Image 1: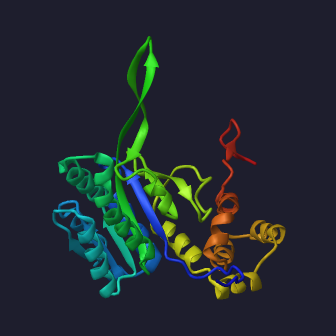
Image 2 (image 1 turned 180 degrees about the horizontal axis):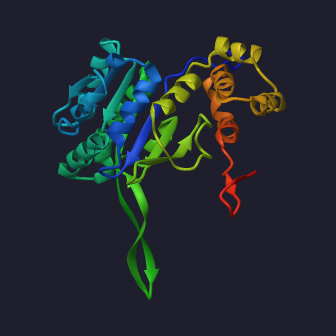
Length: 294
């Protein structure tokens, strides 16, 4: 055992997208993936959704691994390994709820003590989770959600009540991921878990390739990247002065592009405000005789 100073190293994002059917998990995952690596040929989709991944082939030449039943943990592990051996940089697993459905179904077939029987399946499931977490590639996992209920007492009777959506996966699996986006029926995302601190306080937004680029910048902030950012760091007040000192949109854009992606995100509101100020044209008013009046 040896203590060493904590040091930020290049990271591989392990994230999940949760939604009900039609929430946009597959499409959003592909946009995120391209933002992360900027190369469609380095993206692989492990498709357990009956060939649905190919519906978005117009986006780019990404790779698809068609995963057929049974959706056992071992088949998922093998599929991930195939992607790694092919040197994929981003692996989309669409989706992982099928693995948990398989576990539940196989467990229900066993007779005897239910608690004891779980000892046959928990190690297999954990091996799949660890394969995702330890893989040296970005992982984007899609999780189906369903309506969740709790039993509450009313008038002396226990009645079920809706309490929102719950991911079809073993309880607490979402805690294994660095980032979890919940997608609504209009494809807007909110972060229900975010160790990157990039999205937690943001209002609902639609995922784009820029979202992936922001994550890529965070993942690449190893020691060298942190030092580079420190060398080019601008004090917040000084940066605000530069933003509002810009007298045209082109100058403002040049300043924006000179910053790293994380700083761009931090000051996006100020850049947008200044841009609106620069392009705003005051409405003209006219006198009663039709002549222009300033």
